[in-house]
Length: 504
Image (cartoon, rainbow, N blue to C red):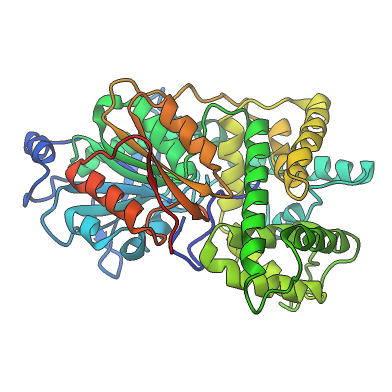
C-alpha cells in the first residue's frame, strides 16, 4: 500500500522480490545493435571496489538539483555483478517501493535474474536518491516510527482521526527538520535523470532495465524523458501513472481484497487451514479478527513493548499476500492470531517495513512517503483531512477490509512541506518496444494497471499472467520467464496481448 513500500523486502520468502540505469562509446553502440559482444567494459566514471561475493560497488556523483547541473552534488550508491559469459552490456534493476534498496536487491541477483540473462549482462543495482545509501531521507526516530505505523488507519471516532492527523503532521515536520534540503529533489523524475547518468557512466549507449512495482513507474518516466536511449525495458507489476493518488489507493486496496479471497479459497483446500466453510465465511472471520485487535490487542511474544493492534495486524496480513509462496506462513499466522497470538503477524509486518530485530528501521518507510508526496498533488490543510475521510469511505465500499487503511496511509502528504508535482503522461514517443507484464491477481499493482500502462506507452507491449502474488518474472511461470529472457537478450518482442497460463 502507498503508506508502505510497494514491494516486500527480500527476507520475505519467494521469488517475486520484489525491484536501473547506464553513455556509450562507439564500439558499445555497435555491439548493442548486433546483440553480441566480448568487449571489455567501457566504464567512464565509476571507481569500482570489491564488496564481497563477486560484487563491485561504487558511488556516482549527481546534481542535487538537476536544474542546476553545476551546483551541489549528492552520491548514488551503485553495485554490480559482472556478466558470466559473452557480455552485451549492463542491466539495471529496481525492486520498487518507492523506498526499497536497489543495492540490497541486486545482492540477490542470482535469484532475481535467470542464468541466461546474467551470462550476458552485468547486473547493476542502485539506491535511488533519498533511499538507503544514496543521501537517505530521515524523518523520525525508531520509537516514533513504531508509534506512526501503529496508528489506527481505519478510524472509528473523531479521536482516532485526530490522532492520525497529529501523527501525520509529526511525520511531515520530522522530514522537514531532518531532510528538508533533499525533499524537493527526491521525485521519480529526479531518479530517472540519475539513471541516465548511471547509464552513461557504465558506458551503455541505451538502457536495458528490469523494474518491478514502483520500479515500473521509474522505468516509464525514464522512457518518457529519454525515449531514444531505450534498448529494452521490462516493467513487471506495473503502476498506472495516470491515476490520482486517491484512485490509486482505492484500486490497490481492492487488489488486496481480491488477493485475500484467492488466498482463502486456496486455504480451504489445505489441511492446516484455520478456517472452514466458504470464502465468504472465512472473510468474515478475518474481519472479526481485525475488529477484535482494534478493541483488545493481540499478544506479542517477540519481547518488545509493542501491542499488536489492528494496524499492525493488518500490515502483517497484507505482507504474505504479495507472494503465493508465503501463503503457508499466512495460514499459520492467522491460526495463531485467531487464538489471540499476534506474534507471527507482527514479524511479517516488520519484514514489510524493514524493521530490524533491534528495533531500528531502514529508511524505507520515510523514503516511500517522501517520494509519493512529491510525485502527486494532495489536498492541503483541514480540507485535506476531510477529503481523505470522504475518499476512505468510498474506498471501503469496494474494499471493506483494506479501503480505509490504504487511503489514510498517505495523510502526511496533506501536511508535506514541499508542494507535490504530478507526473507527466508517460507515453514515451519514439521509444523502442517496452514490455509491460501484469499478473491477474496481483494485490499491490492490479492487472488493470498493466493494461493501462501498456496502452499509455506509445510502444508498450502487454504480457499477462494468470497468477497470484506481486510480479510475474521468475515466480514459476516458464512462459513469462522465456518471454522476458528472449526480449532482454535478443530483443525478441512478444506479441501485444500475449497471455501466459496459470501454473499447474
